[in-house]
Amino acid sequence: MSSIGRPDRTPLIALVRRADRALQDEMVREAHQRGRDDIKPAHNAVFSILGPDGDRAANLAARAGITRQSMGEVVRDLVGLGILEMVPDPHDRRAKLVRYSEAGKAFAESGYRHITDLERRFEEEFGEDYAAARRVLERLVTLLAEVTPEAQG
Amino acid sequence: MSSIGRPDRTPLIALVRRADRALQDEMVREAHQRGRDDIKPAHNAVFSILGPDGDRAANLAARAGITRQSMGEVVRDLVGLGILEMVPDPHDRRAKLVRYSEAGKAFAESGYRHITDLERRFEEEFGEDYAAARRVLERLVTLLAEVTPEAQG
DNA sequence: TGATAACGTAAGGCTACCTGTCAAATAATG
DNA sequence: CATTATTTGACAGGTAGCCTTACGTTATCA
Image (cartoon, rainbow over all chains, first blue to last red; front, side, top):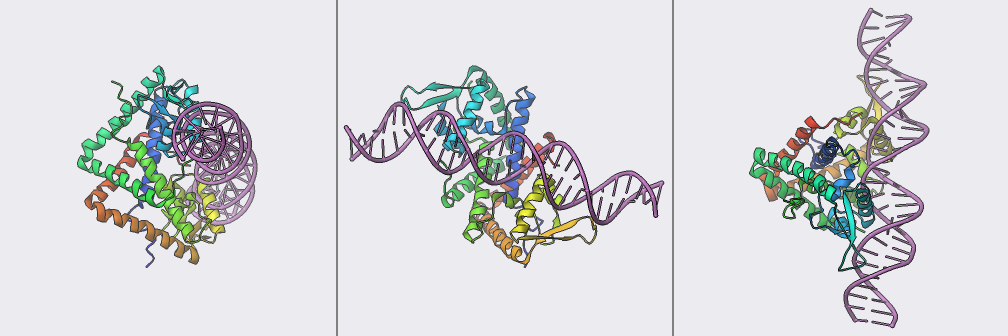
């Protein structure tokens, strides 16, 4: 009955972990290849979330699943690199709008194109199965979110 | 043409990242619920890889994708908790076999059962789509591994 | 108007990794 | 044998990416 760790099948948790690392590394690698050696894995949290209209840092934090403070640091970092800029929110003077600078826009688009190309490759190779994979992952997240206490500040 | 971050679809990288966190948290939560407050997320690297026959720490490290030193620390930690034990490898007396202690075996099995139940739920809900999702993730990892330099010590 | 909540931010701490180095044990080889 | 190569576990020190706690400021609402 010692059913621990059947070798015929990688546990989902190990599989997902490896996929996460691989994607993270890949995006950083691509950025470095374009000459941006200053891009770090944590920056992906912004790139994968921030749209062309900008957003508040607190909002970004919530969507990325990290604290406002952590997101604040990432944003400050990217402002320092000239990729983001912060402007006062005209509607709420507590808030600031985070958005891409002109240079940052170009950079983010190339990264976005890269990940999009990668996804397109998967769609071509797996077709409907790729959509299914996305659905499963989304369900996984929502299902576990029901059970696990949110860790957001 | 500002196609950055279409909001209609979460980028794969964000999706996978969230799934990883959710799973990691879930396993730790389950362990704590069973009274093992001393289990940390990093320990999952062992539980998701070590089978009933035991293995060398260096091997575990390679399979988990972390350095020997890091895995060594995790293993030492779990030995200290009475979950793992290290015995001389009969085939190579330089080496030691890492394996579950009697208590550890019981603990690991409950965790294994938990993740297995979770996967079974997904199989029931998604059927063939779940298998497809696993295939996509596996392909993702191997595809990106071809391109990204291995980070294993 | 006063209480409460939301925003950004500063300070400090922790975890999970990393690199570099080393001695000891053993295996493999000439 | 004697020597060289391999393997391991451990120590030292460093870093990235988070977290908690605590503020001051500005909005919102009773």
